[in-house]
Amino acid sequence: MQKEFLKDYAKRCREDSIRAVNNSKKQYSYFISRPAPSGPDKVEKKEVGILLEKKGIKWGGTWMGTDLIGYYTDNSCYYLVSSQISENKFGKDFFEEVQYKAAKLFIKNNPDFVFSHTRNKIDFRKKDTSMLLDFNDYDKAHQFIIDEFWRQSPLPNDYIKSKDEDLEMVTYDSILGKYEFKDVPGIDAYFVISKSGAIKNIEFDTIFLNKSNSKYKSYFESSLRKIIKKLKWRANTYKGIPINSSESIYIKLP
Image (cartoon, rainbow, N blue to C red; front, side, top):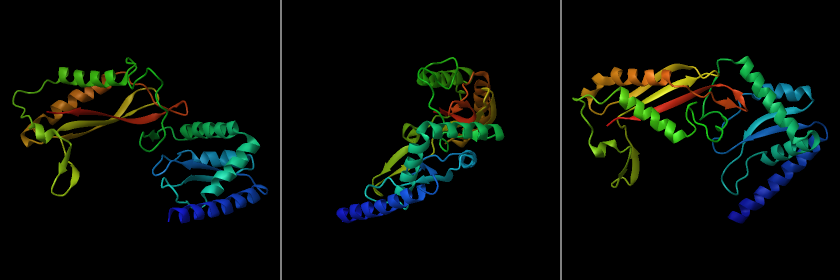
């Protein structure tokens, strides 16, 4: 069975590669691949197309293959070979420059767009930096936020703590033979870090297992809101360009 898959893969790839070579003699084209199975797409696709077409290069858009070994995704070798031929002609640096200019153009034309770590390929933070300007270590910055939260909002005397077994987010059901996820007490804070580092659009998702603790919802959320606004946040970047981006903080409640 595996041999048949590989034989089919080689046949289809060879046919698509020949088609790519022949079509490139008429017009160069370019495609950008996305990591399978759920890699982030490019928000600046439209701008990439505009810039490439000015150079007479056909923009084919983004595409995604498969992460299953031996399986062939329709046209994948066509996309790869077409793009390789274009890079051989114009240079890899040319296409990287086009993507940078496209990103810059998109950000300029969409000043309020908010990038997400899950949907967009935001730049990795530089070594020895964190989400806070005053810290060069992520773990220390995160711990500082937690410590500051409990310093400003100590646990009320009549707060009812959950049992240890209720604080496990993942449990295993031996009867059903599967893992189950369950709600645990805590506060998720979601907000936007603007290009300048300013904070806006703070929202909360707070869970209490014991309903009598819900009277402290505003107490905890107000404290975390003040901390988020007080801290100096580092703006994220996309291809080196400052952007608006979503951020989150989680505080585990007892």
